[in-house]
Amino acid sequence: MPILKDQIRQNPHRLPRDAYHGEVTVAFTVCIEKKRPLFIDTPVVDLFIKFLVSAIKKNDCMALIYCFMPEHVHLILRGTTSSADAWRAIVDFKQQSGFWLGEHRPMYRWQRGFFDHIIRQNEELSAQIRYIAKNPVRRGLVQAWDEYPYTGAHGIHLKDMINGVVSL
Image 1 (cartoon, rainbow, N blue to C red):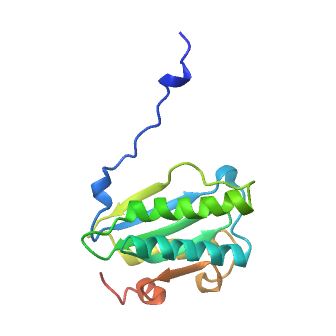
Image 2 (image 1 turned 180 degrees about the vertical axis):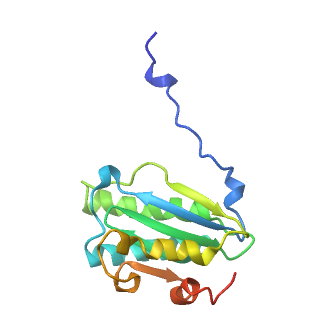
């Protein structure tokens, strides 16, 4: 019996929406469809950072780290209030930047959904931030994490997070 198009459903996101509310810390990976390298041009990355900052501010979050690799973005977001919504921040970021892509770079699109991981209090946050910061080094793009121009943070000093000086 053939499967009809109407019978195919999109799988719901694996975590309930309320898991992303409040002062939670979430690691996200958001990919460009077909692994096309988009984030190799400083003006494009700078614009996407503006989209990200707009989305996180709107949703009461901060970016403990972001790392724009050529074909994907790693982020760790932290809610700053009880009404913060990290999931909505990512959705808003993808929506705003996706609209820009459709208008200015129609050959690029975001992959559907995203990968995420709620970071629990017993996990070492600075180790996860260091891991993301070292992605460009592991890929051979730079020799040291702080040489990569597309890694940063918003709302906190990245070097303090990497060194474990700041605790949340």
